[in-house]
Structures are given as C-alpha cells and as structure tokens.
Image (cartoon, rainbow, N blue to C red; front, top):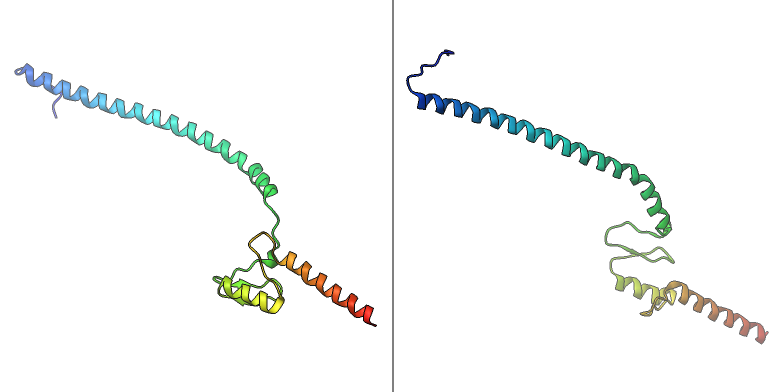
Length: 137
C-alpha cells in the first residue's frame, strides 16, 4: 500500500478520509462504551459484594425465627403418611384417619384439635374407668 495519494480526484480523497475518520470514531466509541460498561460492572459487583457480606447474619436471623421441628416425627417416604402413635404407614390420608379412629380411638374434628386432644380424652376416660373399678373394690 502506498502512502502517497494522487490528488486527481478530490471527491474520492474526501470520501476515503471520511470513511477512515468514521472507522476511527467508531473504534473510539466502542472503547468508551467498554470503559462505561466496565465501570457499571465494578459498581454492580461492589453492590453484590455488599449483599453477600450481609447474607450470613440474615441467615442466622432467619434460623432464629424458624420453629424447631422434631425430625423423628417427619416422614420422608414419597406418598406415604405415618401414624405418629404406632408408626404404621398409609398411602392416603383417609386410610390414616380410618386407622387412627379404629385402632387408637382418635377422631379428628375440623378444628385444630388432633392427637393431643383426643389422647387427653382417652386418658381421662381410662382414669375414670380405674376410679370406678377402685370404688367397686
């Protein structure tokens, strides 16, 4: 490529200079966009870093807010429900309810009472039976 340009056609020369200037300006524009993008990434990285610094205390706070769960009472078998009294497993909630009603005398109502309320009722009845038996002696 020659560094000398013939000045025979000034229009072609001007066109070539403008194309070269456009290419240079496009490169400068891309460079500035990259600098701006890099700056934005640094700012976002700093804010993300700040969030990560605050995560461990937040996790501890969330742990303190969660209720304690008795792992022994949890069942992890897919699709199986466990009777908390005897440990027998059932495929449906209906099967578990029928079992608890027939075997353990537990009849759950629609309210919040469950095993603990009916267990108290069962124990009260058992105590009354023992007291009657003692009176008869």
